[in-house]
Image (cartoon, rainbow, N blue to C red):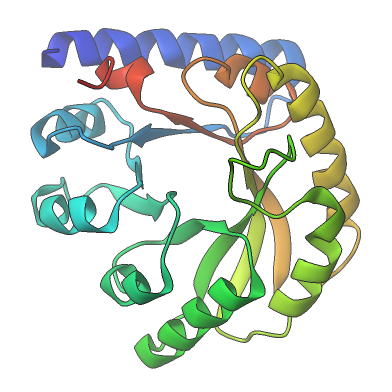
Length: 227
């Protein structure tokens, strides 16, 4: 896929997000489009950045480490993949948010490395909204327990929730996720702001916007199918 095709894909996505916002959301709400860069060469990622998609989502620590120095400096990097504790040290200084926290143990390790780096790390709690055994993420009925534990940590700040719905069940999953998100907003945990909902990918981002997502994570919709 060349730069022109990437540009056209982004125009289409921006149009679709704009239409969904106009239909379902308040005029002052913001929806950010994240380019998911898994297996995508940095040159093509930079083409998307040049089109205004400055939020990037990285899935793999090693791949990110190999590409990060070549990314356009306008890019903001979030880590969205499953994160092993022994890899935190490689990303703690260069990403602005970690989307995939699903245990107090992982949160505590991020907190420890953030303290060493003298920074406050923003994180999202990954919710297994479909309660699927094959997926990571905290089950909805364990969210309160997890947030209670994470709220005691001083070097991370919970900014909201992230989720990937079961295939074919996006609409009902996003609706449930939005209800949970709204309930947590009024719960007032320490070190928690609960203002980001990261949901929706290439196949279902319009539905995610309908139900309140303000970060949609799009890979193939921008860069084409992975080989």
